Every structure is written in structure tokens, then in C-alpha cells.
Image (cartoon, rainbow over all chains, first blue to last red):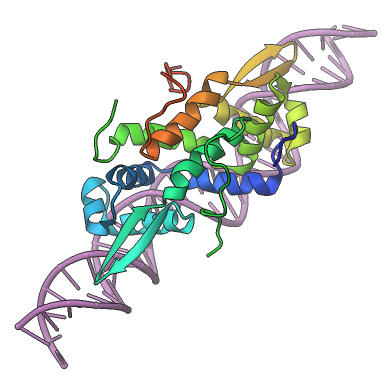
Length: 118
Length: 118
DNA sequence: CTCCTGTTTTGACGTCCATCGAAACAGTGG
DNA sequence: CCACTGTTTCGATGGACGTCAAAACAGGAG
């Protein structure tokens, strides 16, 4: 459970860093926050209207976020609906706790909702 | 308090992203976690021994972390002691909560411990 | 003043990233 | 089959990042 006083293992640090990196861009923060607050699936066009970058850029960001499982995709017809991964809503702040040297009291376990197990 | 359903304002997103970006590197995650767990000031040499990159690299990372106020520096003699910023221990996970569309129940307010108000 | 130790800064190198416009792809409807 | 709409992928461009070795800086001891 990694309760040592030393540094995080390199592999754990790599994984946590990959999560933070997914949110290391303002546009991606906006997208995730938008999907989390709306709490409903949104298609790419809707998202593009909310953040002021081009549509292909939004698509690229969504790809990044989906690869880390922050968002999940659902194809309906020609459109693609993205929604937030509810597991991450609890899990990601826990990661912040761990890095900050706290126990993670919110999400008991995290399975592997964000791990790159695609 | 930003309780809207729309996206985060661009400026807020930029600020949050800058915090996440500070932890978007494995070595920096290790450093922060090390300082948090040790709970005591450590000089650069100690930190270098815990993470396996060169010393100038550690120094560069510490500079990044200090700019975002994740760590604080204290010069004693020729050595420089870095310690975790306790405000961030509570504040940063709250940021994760906000982005994830949650109220931030842990840190009542955050002053401006990490803001670039230097 | 001169060495020594601990740290930051500089310069360089290779890699990754955000963004855009244009092109390719995929369903849907005429 | 063809047009249309929503989305992804491609190619390019400019900028930022992580890392290192070497050089510059600073405080303390002889």
C-alpha cells in the first residue's frame, strides 16, 4: 500500500504523473470539468462550442483524456458522445492525496479505472 | 465560487492546469511525495539520492515546484533545505475535486498559497 | 586569499505537445 | 449512388520540456 517514508516507486510515480499530465493543459481541464458538471454525455460539437479552440484540437484532447480513462466514449449514429468516468471523480483526487503524503480516505480501492488496460 | 454548469473559466482552467503540470513529471511526483512523507526539510543532496537523475536536474525540478509553491526553500549555510508547503497538502486535492465537479469539502479556503502572487 | 562543498545556472540536444487547416472516414437520408 | 453532417486522422509548425555535463556562484574552513 506504499506506506513507506521513502519516495514513491518510480513506476507508481510514472503512473500518477500520467494522470496529472492528462490535466496539465487548460483546455483539457475545461473539457473534463465541463463533462463532470454537466453529468451527461456530450458530443464533440457541444464541447467545441464551450472551449475556444478548433474542433480537431478538441478531438485530440478527447483522445488523450480517453486514453487515461478520464472520459468514456459512446458512439450513437454519426455522433460520438463523451462522458466523464465516474470512477475517476473519486479516484483522481485520491491520487492527489497519496502524492501529498495523505492516506486516501475517499475511494476505498480504485480497481483499474484509469490504468492503461485498453 | 464557480458553481455554474458551463466550463471552468479559461483563467481558472489555466491556473489549475499549471498546478497539475507541476506534477506531470514522474521525478517531480517523487520529490513532492518524498518531502511530504518525510515531513522535514531536506537538502538537495538528500533528494538526489532518492531519485535517480542528475543533481542539476533535481535542482531544475525543485525550481519548478517552488514556483508553484508546492515546496518552500530555506537557505541554511551553503545548503538549501526544501520542505513541502503544508497549505498545498490540503489545497491541491481540493483543486482535483473542483475539476471533477465536486464541492471541495476539505480545505475551507485556500488563500493564495500556490498562486503566482510572488 | 584559497580550497572545498553544496547549489544554481547555462548551453545543448532530442523529444514531446498544442494548435491549426485540410483531408479522410463514417453514418444517414435523399 | 450522391450529398451532408459529425468526427477522426494527417502533416506541419512553433514552442515547451527533461535531461545531462560543464561552468558559474556562494558560504565556510584552513
